[in-house]
Image (cartoon, rainbow, N blue to C red):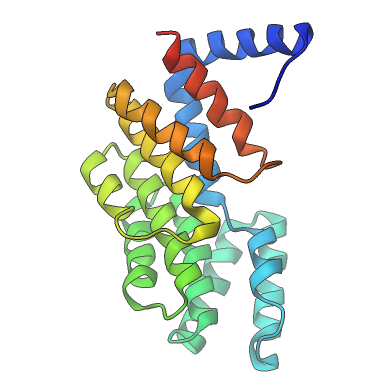
Length: 211
C-alpha cells in the first residue's frame, strides 16, 4: 500500500470528502471510462498484424475516432461490420459502434452490439472487454442485476481488477457498502502496480471505510 506525506494526505482527505459528496457522479465518470476503455491504446495493442485488405478501413475508422466525428465513426463502423462482420475486424467495429451509440444516448443499440460480441466473437479478449462495457452500460441505466450478470464467468486476467472494481460500483450504487468494499479490495489486489486506477479504487475504499 502506498504511503503519503502530509501534502499527499491532505489531498487524499480532500478527495475522500469529494467522494462522499459526489460519489454517484464519480461512479458515472468511472462508468464512462470503462465504456470508453479500449479506444486507441487497445487498438494499438490488438490490431497490428491483421489482413491488409481491412487496414484502410480501420485507418479511416481510427481517423474518424480521433476527430470525434460520431456520425463518421458510426457510418465507418457499419461499413466494416457489413464487409467483415464475421471476423475480428467486425468485432472491433461493433465495440467502436457500441461506444458511439452510447455517447449518443442510444443505450439499447449499444447493448445489442455488445451482446453480439459476447455471444459470437471467437476472441476471448474482445469478449471480456465487451462484457465489461456491457456491465458498465447496465450500471449507467441502473439495471443492477443485469450489470452484475454481465460480469459472470471468469474474467480475462488483464481485466480482472476492472471487473472487481465495476462490481464494487454496482454494489455502491445500491448502498450495499460492505459488498462494495470487499469488491474494491479485491480490485486493489488484482490491479497491477503502477496502474493509475489503483488510486481511484483506494479513494473508494477509504471513503466507504470512513462512513
